[in-house]
Amino acid sequence: MYATGNKKMLNMLILEILREYSDESHSLTQQEIIKLLKQNYDMECDRRSVKSNIESLKELGYDISTEHGNRLLSREFDDAELRILIDSVLFSKSISTRQAKGLIDKIRKISSRYFNAKVSHVSNLPELHRTINKQAMYSLDTINDAISEKKKISFIYNDVGTDFKLHPRREREYVVNPYQIVANNGRFYLIGNYDKYDNIAHFRIDQMTDVRILSEKMKPMKQVPEVAHGLNLPKHMAEHIYMFSGEAVDVVMLAERHLMTELVDWFGTDFRILEETEDMLKIRLRVNPGAMKYWALQYGPYVEILQPEKLREEIKDCIDKMHSKYSDK
Image 1 (cartoon, rainbow, N blue to C red):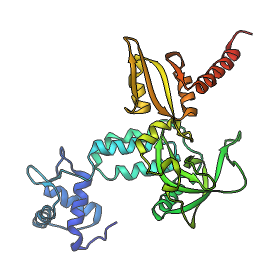
Image 2: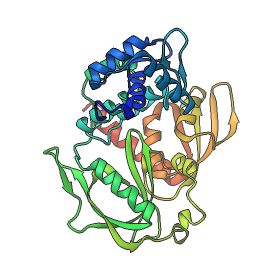
Image 3: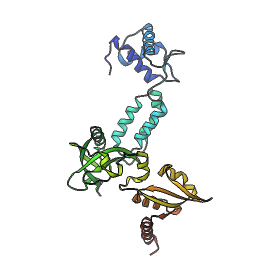
Image 4: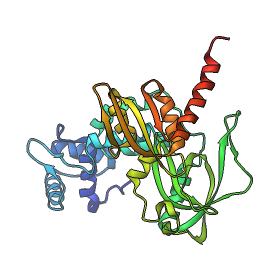
């Protein structure tokens, strides 16, 4: 809140009024600005002062139009960008409902009241499945600081019990070298190295509690074979759908041609089409085998894993178990 009655603040108060009450389609007269200054800030002003302060704001670089009224044209974010930000918060499963509503309110304040009117329905949307971990946002912030400071972190890693509460997976803390935070399927994950091993691991941040930055420097990525030459994030994400840990393998599979869009959605464009017919594609890609098993089961009627043989056999075993459960007794 700005101090009221302070003429030195007049230009900033006028700017705030233009931000809230004007946009490309809505302008304010000088008299309307004077009225809002009095109403919102108890600031007395005349037309000449309004005009001179708006000119000063324009000289400072603010994109204000004074033709047919006064309105602020360009902003840090346009309405479409703000809507993307709101939707990103709205459909994130890694923050609580209260935190989501708080963030959305802050985003809405960046634009004018006319934008707020267009997104007022957002707060009335039905409840989404969100994390039950109230520490998730604080954990995210702590991990981000640790990455910046190149320090190790410790935390308790939890699973959800039948009481719908978090329970530690084990008594002792995990000690991890944090390298990167990523978002996948509406949740935040930490890509790091579990201190006692030399591979990359993934941890769901909304399953982490009591996150602490340690004084010990983290292990450099060059000492972890899987990312010794750096972390190629797009490639890593394409190879680790569902964020399964472990090294990727070469997979050859048949997929019905109509799945092409889904293939690109899941694996990006870094896969090779070996053969194609009017109905089928034979492709090779590099992906985590555990994740690939679940993906193949998800798209079961439309794909067939050909190689590696071990993965093919694991999928066959899963199918046999499913058939046993769903067959007539």
